[in-house]
Length: 394
Image: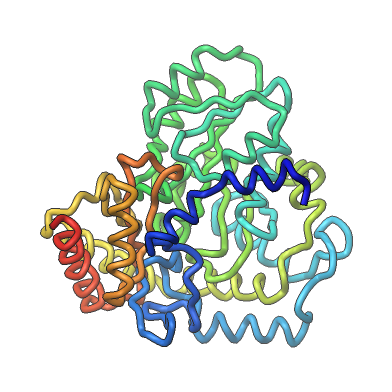
């Protein structure tokens, strides 16, 4: 290995330090399907770290659709959408998603991360401006880095700071405001009505990342813009299939012209293999369930409200969340790792969120609620979290 590379790698000691303390919480191996209970090292563990909000990852109809797609189309497409990798089911899913989100057209990507990379780097040029919330997902940040444009960041959900940034920009340039519909760490929502008003005032476009909103907000789970009745005011709606859609992949929906433009300019589409047939089919099956069985979303919200009430009764700090993402703020990296380890030993899987994902003073464990959780599972998890916090405080 080249010496400079060796030296760079040797300087990375953060993970080793946490491992030496016996607190390393990442890459935990699961040997079962993603459900409300999973198997880790032969032990049943309650899963409160999954993004499968509607609990469809092991739904019989979703699994059957995936199996049937492999039987018909094989395991992969062996090429990009641009060349030989477009199947009829890709087109079907795009048409369904366009209708679902209230847009003219949609375009599939192999992952949600690639969707943000391709769309933002494909649209934002040297004289253009990308203005995004500081708490946006990493894929949005990286999409901005790959563009040749000017990237501005405004304070989280601060409409005053957003307007301050826009006020300074030239009038006749492309300006795109990009926000998460639901912020993945904090669980709060973008202030879309206020963003729309500001965007209209300064002639800016709007892009909403609905990764954590689809299946959760809006009619049939159509997302943030649908929730606020502002679909026509949002230029682009992006989503992923790895959460409510119980699959893998991503998409962007918008007007016919912008989608056609992206088909020829989004490099992460042009130069990546297309979504596998099984992934497309399982996303289609999940969409069928979302549109025809509203009880999944209804149960998700019953569980979310129940869990939120229990956490608040225990006096826990859950911030400003309004979604099935329930952060419990610990505000100390080491204590967050300790809590995560203790909970796993007690049979509860949660996700630790520490710096640099958030500042150390905002470190937290994140509970993600699923429609398929039972009240008794939620009660057990909240009780064990409360007990664990008391142990750590001693």
